[in-house]
Image 1 (tube, one colour):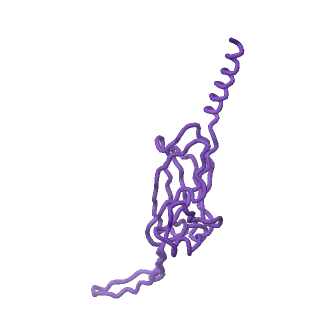
Image 2 (image 1 turned 90 degrees about the vertical axis):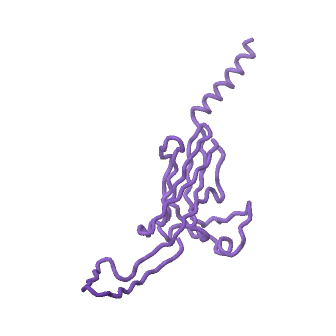
Length: 177
């Protein structure tokens, strides 16, 4: 009886300790402009917040960093299932989250950080499985819109109206997010 109980006791202890300590789970998040390229360092990155989907607790946060990705793959070739859109230089936010059970997470992305007047927020939800990484392309969140810089009139300028219609020249630089 003792020979049977001891191994069973060891198995139960290992199971309990694994459940209590959790498992580091790698998560890669990439933020991509809709129908365009990754949002990285050149646009100030994208702010990424990973929250517990049930409690709202912040599990990880940070900025994407890196390049905008391969133009040919992202913009010229048709996207195929299972084929990576990113390369090693493509912008990403990478973290490891310690979880001990499948966890629904909400991933929020806000971009571009260098163009505060153009900030857009997008989000999605995914299940994280303890010890099962989401790597490679990771979770790709698309952000729509344009980054707009108003060049003229400048912020400090005012326009005086004298009762008649006035033509106001407007000059802006617009790029896809």
